[in-house]
Length: 233
Image (cartoon, rainbow, N blue to C red; front, side, top):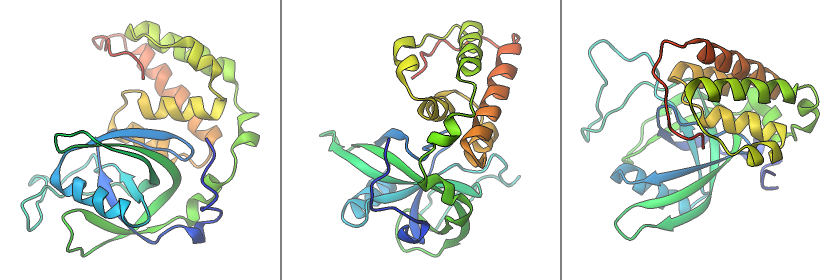
């Protein structure tokens, strides 16, 4: 998936962004994430985003929260600690459900490092972001694809699916470019927060693929877990 020409360098990306904390939900550069929005604070976030630059930051809540429990803000909304890295995404599709929800599709643009959370009067949270560590995200990953053993990835995925008794559309998988396949598996496989975060923070596509292979192989070897029969999206 091509990135909109609007974003040619990190200087084109906004420093202050609204963030959507969601556990085990990743969007990666040049990948898409569909979301069903229903909480009032995030409905408000999408309303403001659609009327502005149409970008938000997807970020996971930290896997390690205070022993006293997740804090709340002045509106009584939960306010978990955030991971240090998220991904900026553009709302490329927006549809109302008719019952108060929004269906949106996010196009991943570039990962960011959370510099600081800002004091905000909005229901949703806002942060100051730095994209400098991830400028590579704005470049075409075609050269990196050549360094990935695609057959090894497919074989490892097949073993993972068989062990977990999961189904998948192999015609679609085989037709997906390597970069898209690595990223879509990173986003769709049911890994834990820390594992998802490790995949997100992998500096390059090549290193993300290596991390993904390791996680798939470990999951395949863990035969003591009950199978998850959810089809792979």
